[in-house]
Image (cartoon, rainbow over all chains, first blue to last red; front, side):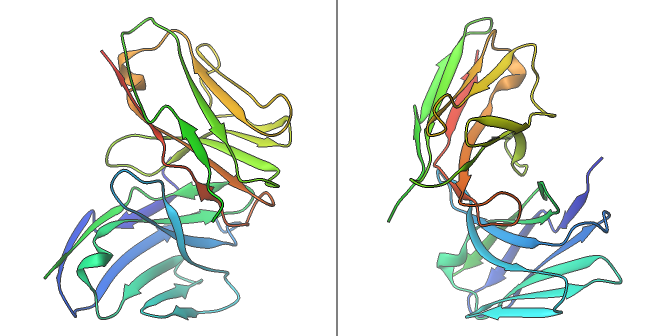
Length: 109
Length: 114
């Protein structure tokens, strides 16, 4: 049973545009929602995380929007740059972290 | 900057052979995780250690996989015998605390079983 559904599977965005990746979860016990960024040949690295007591968290060009009632959260990358090209994983955790299947993001120069 | 070390980075083995992966977590991190990442998917937890104790191995195929962290520092993941379906990236991660603390991932070991 997949507990964290992520979309789209792949995404192409023009440089300077907004990249949006969406995730949905089922388990209402989840209370920690991190996003990880993975470059080819590297392990994932934490990008930004949110807890369900807030609806939005912003760090630089990266923003998480969280909708607790809909059990959905999303990552917005503003002013997307070629260096943002990577695979992005949403995740959800109570005591154990469950990852989504990932979104391959490509930013066109 | 402290990093999680893993070796080897790449391993090619024939099916039915034994393979072993090593992980050295960030110093002071009590929690260590082994994940399997199949191409095009997210990491899937195989086993979680708190110090030297296993706290979650519910997704570890125990008939062929084993993991240990004898002194609560570095860890070894073994597969015996390897099967074609084991081809994947094996990632090690560590965190200071369990649960909702940031996990730091190593570069992974890419296993190919032929």
